[in-house]
Image 1: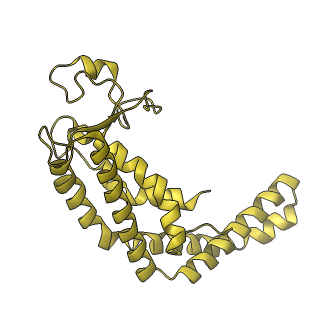
Image 2: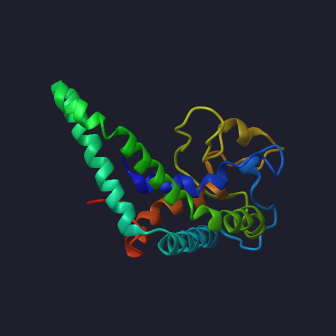
Length: 210
């Protein structure tokens, strides 16, 4: 399991907030007359925000979370899970029973690990909300670039990264005439993913046990 990827989704939970900007939700993030104009400047500008906010998240995690203790708990729980799965595959009932005695302890450790990971959100959540919903939409346009292909790989309307053909035909939509245009929030999300692992390693807040 990639714990860094899970952390990124936790940190990006502000992207899933209920619609507070109108009928289009995240798609309505942006401006008809942005302060930053041009695809190149917009791409680099949004990426810069993603990097800075990732650095902020990592700094808060480094300050608030005991990384040594966290990795010890992770290593212990992962080792137990691996041993339990091996015992179940080999149908070693004695080993399964032995490992089962540690279930409550391991559940307690897993809960503690979750609490340690969630604690930094108490500090980072509000600044992220303010920047993402109040600052970025003023600086940048609704869409930042045209993708050569659609990036909407998840069915439904909950996680659209690019404008659909139907939206591009709707004169009232921000995507009008721009099929496969990448939404502002989507580029922020993708650029955050791209740099998060690197930043976590540089700040020594990565949850990669290797």
